[in-house]
Length: 435
Image (cartoon, rainbow, N blue to C red; front, top):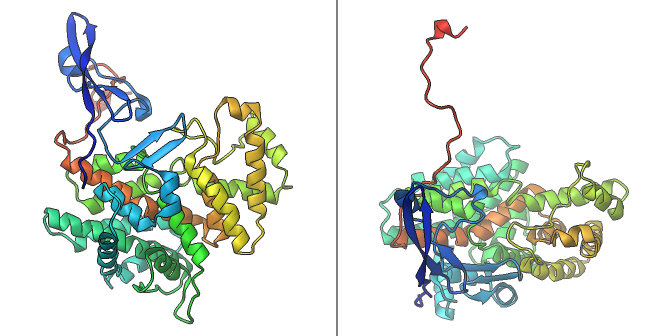
């Protein structure tokens, strides 16, 4: 791995004074110019803690993995613009980059791919594990439970060698787990991995094939899924990544930490958002197809309708991932020879929202969920599997952050503070006197 760019400790400090106590808080500047106040000694020096609901203004760590500039619509993995990686790389190349800090050589990528192919199968006992779960279970908790269960099969002490094995096993088995979670809910037999196929084609085969006949894998579909995995591979300190770091900070093993991240991603405000986009588009199509009417409802504060897939916690500009997907979406649908009422509605929604002062003034631009759901739908992927594919994509990012955290010289267990707002000390009242 190349030497990582380090943040710079600035010479000046911030002085804080409170009730006769004071603290000098140092400043740190990141490689892209962002400045943070180091508050590690704030409480011990002054008795103060910071209050930041949702951690929207709190830097919990230093990281060299992903850079986001939401105001200017910039996303880079290890310094590489997402647009270039999406155009030129495969998902496994990007996974290597996130894990190791540099793009792989041909030899490194070949060895990495071969090592992953050696571990794509699940233990046969997992058939009974899946069989014990309800058929109508959403695939996300099934995936979370399965990844957590992997820790019972690989229990060796977490040496660097064992951690490497766990990383490879997770990347190798996640497509198998994802496909099995879907096959279980529709009552079809599980398909074994075919290691002569590339990573994404293997997943497509396990998802759609049956033992009855060969399944022709459409290279357009496989490449589109590979692209979607790349665009979801990391996104800095989001809810699920922060969950992986927080769970891992207790020195929980990698499988347990990733299982927790999957559960966090399942939420409709996080990974489940692309499913909500499709549900919105289908709702508009079922009604009368009037995009203008739905937009008017979304602007009405007394109406429950919401414009899903617009706006982002970080981006106050056009999400760069959405820009890539907008082009890809039209190409996929065109090359598959399909017409898509949902795509027509989606493009009309975007056209209106980008011109309407209500949305422009609020900086509600399309995000990655807006077009990813349309692509998944066009490829025939069931709606309840959208977030599972998000999980597959985000996996190398989660692992990279878990590894970075473990190797950080400032590593310590995560333990946020709070501002207590409950009752003051009061006397205990025995049960016979409580009325």
